[in-house]
Image 1 (cartoon, helix red, strand yellow):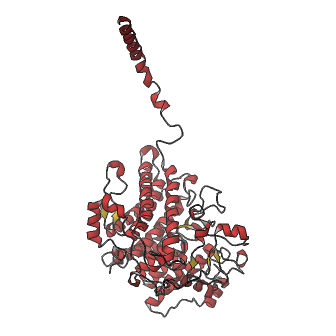
Image 2: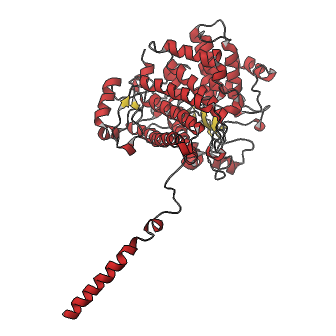
Image 3: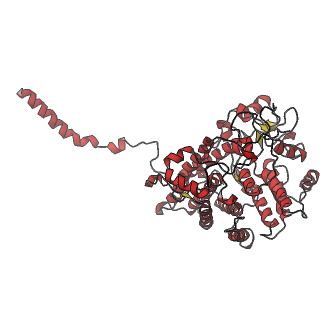
Length: 520
């Protein structure tokens, strides 16, 4: 018994002796040598922008395009978007995708402001990117978490919903600050920037162009109208040197996906995220397709200008030529698909020479393009807010909208080829028309300029009711264009108090509740 006791005591003494040495090198051994524990702005920027844009493109395809008569699903099922009907769960995807990246964008600003990492350019780019994604959020849902968003690390798990007006006014402050920060021209890592490859001056131009987009969106609200119009004039005219804007298609804010799937760091999300058979399943819509056909538009009729006479926006004309299905057709009408988007797989197997699929195109990753800016200025000029002829901006927007997709078509509106196109298509500016006539002209062409640009077609239609879309007999929702997406269902249980306050402030959590800038 005594021997056993001594053995136990001896073991304890040995254990006590070696115990202090057990943690020797513990931290080093348990540190992951591969994954990064701390990060820097240059490592956060590209993933955030790519993920936001990828989500935008997915909902552009199956939501915006269906509502705005770019495509039409061949379906008699329930909750078909083109019939102005969709399930509440449709809301979750964008809400989740955008708010996750809000955290990363805010971290970029914070990290770039630390003394040892100070970089004013990353801070400015962060603010522009935040203004971009928060404008998408509020234009889609209305009142959303803003001032308390992205503070989960600090324990704020139930952020308040800010009023849309307050969000917009603060977005303007962000864009002002970004414009100031970017004047320093502090260099950034080229590889960190998928939009402008490190060209800080172009980011500044995008920020101010985005500023004009957002100013115009709320310019009809009586309580902010005068200040918005004054700021539009300052940026576009009286102080334009201090607010440089996008000046050509090459300066458009885009992410150039690699031309071939699987090659390069940024692959078109349509290639990896949409099956080939799904991509070509919907028909092109009659409204979208027939206009381009009747205008003999270079984006689908390139016999002279490029690509051997095939569609530069990846449309298969089908057996009936470039034709589309009417949107809002009746259930049971036995509709047949007509023109449709080529899938990448189909182009490869059929060797359709010179054409391009949107699944492969490097041009589909658009944050904001030059043509949109020109149509913003055309509207401002037509309304007398800035000097200059609306006609000039209108033609420049049209020429550059075509040139973006068909580079051999002239971007110069004074070019004889462009003038002939306008004459043949009967798209001359109607200087003697009413304001509604002019808005229809501008916004019909802006509609095509906004092709593939997240949900800007839908936002602009809700703001202006242009272009005039035909209303099919099979529309639901009292034939009324939806005004928003409802909040994700889980928000009601995850943040009930602030959810209820938002609904009380904005109106019922339904698709027909107008957001602040829509209410007149």
